[in-house]
Length: 398
Image: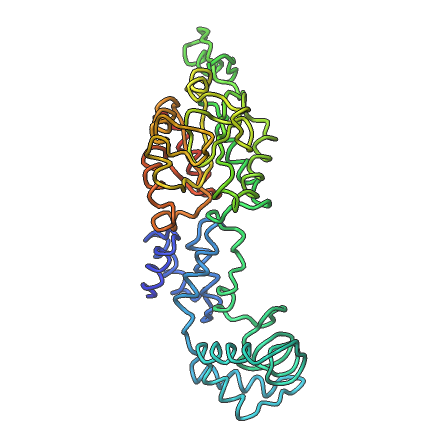
């Protein structure tokens, strides 16, 4: 039953297992959906979706699967009788009855497009134009038995309309990070400060007592790693050029990380498009305020966890050719790809966060250089989900 929906959920990225699906089938056999499409929507989401970050994907899959569901003649007739008997009584014309029974989403969409072309201003009341009140099929706060609500508050929602509204879009973990979501991202960054690193220099009282008891009273001291800020983080950010559209989000990331207190050491460096003989100390990327990259690699040890932030998009010559640097005041004697390889080899833990969604990496203008760079340095989207995956990668030594 609904096997197409199962595969749709998987295709939209909702990790539904066979076990969960069988639980849903058992729940349906016991009538827990209450013979309602909305009931099925809620039941299936409760059983199949493991995290609120997947709600939006679930809604998209549900809308895709059930958007064409038509009301049966029997159910439509029952609804019409209820409307006719409602208090206060509602007047239902033969035209309205026909619309209710033959509700067609494509037809309504076509009518809406025609109204938008014709309408020149706001409209309140009436039965044709898009507006508020009245009996027009388009707008809100009015009445029509087969209309489309545009804005306002819904009173009687169908399951398909609930899904189509995508009320849980803000909970997605793969959405580009905004101000509201940075606290979540920083909590994930704290995972780097764990008990799995550093020397065992704290006495574990409980385990010492347990181990001593196991040895019949012979004292055995058990040591553990303390929760200390042992992690050293190095953030290297692309600045200017094609990164200008991403300036706001990168500034937010910089500010949030700069305020973090759960790192033993935190350093920031900058580059423009690619790293060459010099790495910069401020976003202006002035040669007068830079450090030779060779010196940078000598002074900063391989124990630093490195996060590079950039769109990895540039002319191929900037990455692969001598003298390919876009800044004419700099003459790179070695291709940028050589420096990226040196940096990747020097540090034990390194990742790249790209503000461009990964679905565009293969056909965007910078697809060629993105493909080369992500083969050198593990690359993830600059999203909550991407940061989570990058942190997991940073916790594993090459």
